[in-house]
Image 1 (spheres, rainbow over the protein chains, first blue to last red):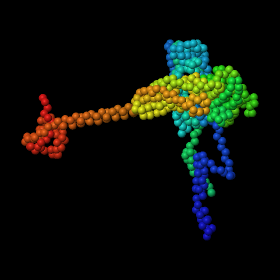
Image 2 (cartoon, rainbow over the protein chains, first blue to last red):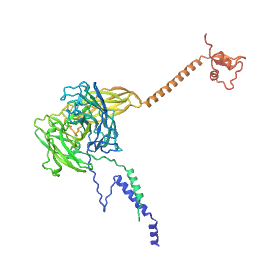
Image 3 (cartoon, each protein chain N blue to C red):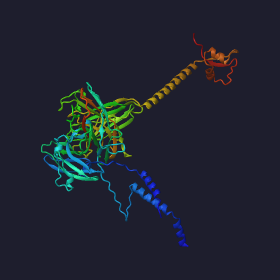
Length: 234
Length: 391
């Protein structure tokens, strides 16, 4: 009789459901970061340390292989003129990651590969950091060409990225500044204070860039300049 | 016993949704290899105190957490002021004159696969071919010259991906990340900040609050900058701030954006900078002994409201005006009614004839005299009517 009862209990007991519930429960505990000592299995997981970094990504945070900053095309002019563009778009956003690597803040800045760099072409070059006549003429710097680039991060969009719990508290955008050889060789785009998220990610879009082009600058389609986007733990 | 794997899979996905994880894109970069236990800041930057003519050994850990091998260039450079006073470093193409020249990488005794690490084409640069998901420590020494002045000197250790130059036109963009190298030459330390100014700029509806301070000492100062914005009547509206390093001899221009306030109006703002002025304080070392505060004057500014805020404000104002007008009319009416005189009705009087005779609406006579429907008036009744108007 006793054996019959135990057999009945076993046959009625929902073993499959219980096993399934146990599996889910274990999985849920692992997801919640709770661990129990196990005598038979030894699962190992290593999470490598990340580093402070800046990248150009698409809106899904996938690195863009050859990022570009496009300034509007202009026509030849007998007057000094200005062309504008946007640095950081939905498809090429500036993506900042701080995976607990810079607890006391960081700076993201933009600079040319050298203060003596110019917009280079096979023909006549023009400058990016000559403030003379607001960039319209050549001044007393090392080169003999005029032109000035202005970067305005103040109206840009700064948002937290993939991290759902991160905020932009303590992270601020830079102000509008123009390159000026020897005086302003680097322009701040983003500054993070020590109070910003130690583990966080952010993206920046819509930084305004304008470039003054001197009068009678020859028409050419091969003007190029090298800029460096730096992120520095400070 | 067989499992229903479809159910298991469904529940697994649900569990993953219940416990979401932040997913970070892979990256590469550098960290201090040997952070000191006595200074938490050394986990993020290099912090050293070195006497003139002496050297200290350090190490930088290069981490490649991407899924591909990276060809990186490691180098040291001087620090340079970025716009606004932010910390930046000179470029690879520029030479170094100060701390950049004090740092010497040494790969002669490297235990790692030496084929992946070799001197770069430029002086004191190291090319590192680092496999996916790996890290490597490159030792270096900081050699402070005998002529180094007392105080703090800053430089950088940087990593940059080596890329073949493309023939693209326009802006070619290179990315790099780096660490500040802060070296203090011991001696009489001066820690002092001075308030410079507090500017308020407006652009696209936002208000930019821009206080500035100057470090007149000989070491950097980690200052807690705070901008407190208040409503016209003194209630707090918003606070901005955080702790920022102000480098020696530099002016730091802070830039806090106050988004267009919903209601607009007149606001005030004051900047407060707090720092440890004790000469025993330093980077990552606070004593709390000589906590110093410098404050700006309170500045006032006006901000236009948002469109919805403006519409609500106009409608509220109109409603208030209507209420006020009704109140004033009512008050005037009550004052006038107090001047009404008593009148004894005759046989010819009806409510209509009385209202016409005294030039007042019959309903007002009913209201003042509290007459009940059907508002009949009997001869000899005494009611109140307006006094006769002078012609």
